[in-house]
Amino acid sequence: MKFFTDREICYADILPPSEVRARIEVAVLNFLKILTCADPAISDLLLINRKSSNRRVSRGLLTDDDTWIFLSRSFCKRTLMRANAAKAFIRVWKVMEMCFKILLQEKRVTQRELFYKLLCVSPDCFSSQLQVNRTIQDVVSLLRCSRFSLGIMASSRGIVAGRLLEPDKEMVDCSECGSSGYAISGDLNLLDRLVMKTDARYIIIVEKHAIFQRLAEDRVFNHIPVILITARGYPDIATRFLLHRMSRTFPELPIMALVDWNPAGLAILCTFKFGSIGMGLEAYRYACNVKWLGLRGDDLQLIPEESLVSLKPRDLQIAKSLMSSETLQEKHREELALMVQSGKRAEIEALYFHGYDYLGKYIAKKIVQANYI
Image 1 (tube, rainbow, N blue to C red):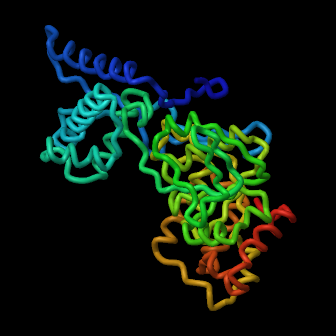
Image 2: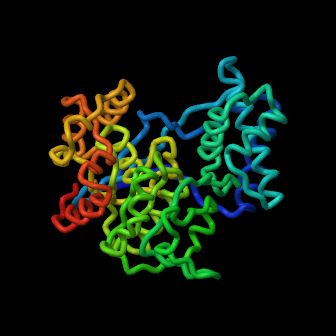
Image 3: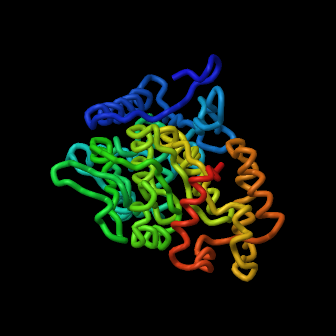
């Protein structure tokens, strides 16, 4: 896949199990071929470099609305020949072996389930969930196929409510699911096949589960034609996948985010909007054009001074990371600079100063005035 004329986007394919098994078999055969040749050697594993230095940005030709991040064609190695890298090399083969077995059995597992299985069969190689997560990304990078193609299922925290109908098998009306909403499946195949209908005019991402519940309980979608969706914090893959599907199914619906006015809230918005470098080979598959509805700096006049909280060191670390990102748009950068300059953060709940039913009015006014960036 060419990006303009001089760069190549590296991406992970969505493949059927037979094709993934074939790629694993080819990797094994190539390894054995070099190992058993006249001049035997243990071949290194060439992986797409996932470091931030290899991150590139694709921008729309006329606006930044279609911006997303990707990894370019730069490689790193996993080798058995260096003591400090040997275990990482072995882990790649262990995870590939496990994925091969999972695909043969026509099963799907979560990353957590895979971790416990590997912990039992290879305790010398795996001691933490983080090691498994990183190794899965190594395998994605080596085989150029998505995590889901490897038989690894997303563990979803996301829920949806509002004016969305899913007329599959049994009709699901997401406006009748109460404040708990409708749980988003972690099965990406199911989400990809989902038939959706709506009469909504907007999609609103809600950072916090408690705020989502308040809006659903107040049935804000009866007054504003919206679909509400939340990942209950930092977005998981299944929620991002469904949002991306909705953006393609209903391209006329603007997507807006309601997040806390702090660096973490902006980071959550940016993950929905641009994708994440940790999912570099699949980032484009989940990116959406997301507008920032609130909270923003001009909303601070609605919030009592006593409700503002001082930024924590972790907030400043996130702010520094965001400031160094070339994906961050100028207006977002200005908001972030204001947060750091003020040393304060504001949470959505601070709007309850005006009453528990104020959130719906706040959202409606913002939408009517097109007050989003």
